[in-house]
Length: 457
Image 1 (cartoon, rainbow, N blue to C red):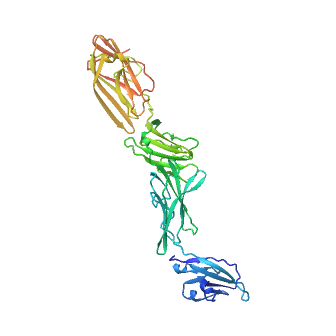
Image 2: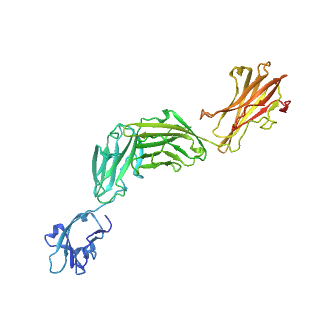
């Protein structure tokens, strides 16, 4: 409406004439446009309202509501033959304000969305300001096709245009956690670019944060793949929450039996056709909790992954005592009281350090106090330094085996220790490296009184 429109006829070449009538004037013989032997005539042509193309098609130069009517066109093959007449229905159309049916909760920017709902929620699908009115209906989409659903429909006449609405009251017609609902439009006149809009809904009574966590320890810059599926899974949702806030945000969702409902909200991630979440290149900023919910025909499952990124040590580090090289046994003499320093450098995740006696029964023979922890962040890695004072309680003890132990609050399996022997001779304390394991990223340093000396053996 408000622009030129063409009623296509495409009569074959060589006809003598074409005459156009309003239906109510046809019986009276009152035409408004003629094309006879190549000459255009009629009130419609002279008024500038109509024109006719060489193939007999009717041109309406400025379409308005009055043209929403029935017409008759008669074609004359020759001047002496009776014409052939055809009934023509002209429907004046107005495209709606959006190119697809709009679902509440989804907005007007996309015809696909994900939303959390409870069983008392209602969903409304609408097409606004269209002519003629567009019929809408709700359906539940599954593996075997669309199931009809119960909905209420209405059409509102707003002058020369119409707004159509359908309301779905029971958004969980089956006892499933995940559903795919479809609003379908009768797009007979081609007013919409997309005839369907879909909404992927999750029942809002699932708490991912309450699940038992599965730790995934992944090296920086490597490929991460998370999977919580079984072979019967039909729907999948992936969510993410950082370690400081347990509020989960949707990363991706898909109905695995159809290829057109698959959304990923982050460019970093990929959702595979089997529902696996893939991170081609893992960075430290991807450390987070990742949860998934999957739905089969008869059951649902959920899983929670704690992804921790570690940085591989390119240069192997060994426990080292001040004044000694790393492959020697080393003795340092000192009084029965002093301070010790243990450092682990260039590691990720951040770890904790603590002093222990190797034998539990020796724990009362030495006391560690005044613990000072220094953590330095260097890019994506950390230097962690523990400095403590010590006092040997039993001067009769001539040997203690100690260790500086590394632990991680993120991953219980990430433990390691640097062990050393403490010898007491004439009131002096000597330390010796013992049981050094390869790849233990420790630097052990003694920080004793200035009178200490070192002896290599």
